[in-house]
Length: 307
Image (tube, rainbow, N blue to C red; front, top):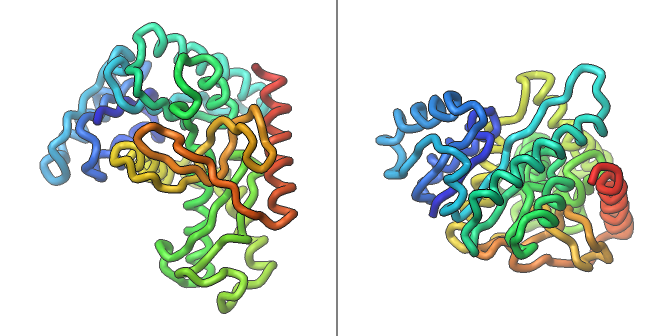
């Protein structure tokens, strides 16, 4: 499988490249960036460690590399300027994203290619990609709340002093302030979380609050997220590459799950070789369902303003 990463010269794109290299699953990784020298530097750095990891083809390339790619990961985006409003930043990133989509369309995509949006605002841009690309909606996905989900699990494991891999919990909805923790289905090692020793409603509320603010905290302390988003991207790409059909909270076009239509956000989703294979709807606590519907409303309002 060939994966192209647009924006690979930056922190998120380069960490995704390394996570895919370390995963040793995809055959070819093409690093694309408007700063060609940065992409070449990242490719060279990955090549230098290749003998200890996997026999892959890793190289810097132009956007023409998307034409024979199985998965096209878009990580390119602009950072917020001092005193810039969130809406102004969204407008700038939408403008940049439209140029990227036009560039992709000019080179063409394989009929069975999947476009994987990571750039923020990820749900809005995923919706734009669904609308503007000549691909079936199921072949356009966004990272959504996959990163927020692993953040939630990591912080919960630290709080309860349990192994992170034994924490099962999901964040749903918007990748943003209106995201919702699905505590009704959360478990620790298969045990219901609300019955686990040491768990209180207050603890869960605090972990959820910290998860919502963790992106800003990482930006403040180290300049931006890299490692966690890289492995989150690899988790989704590997599920596509191996047709694993893992259930992941990726962002995709909603067509009725939980009563939500015509917006991209995260619900439990089966991800395989053909992209989105199924969106799973289970019973939620009333406040969780209300939060998810509210999240859809927040995104729809943003879409109406910027698209």
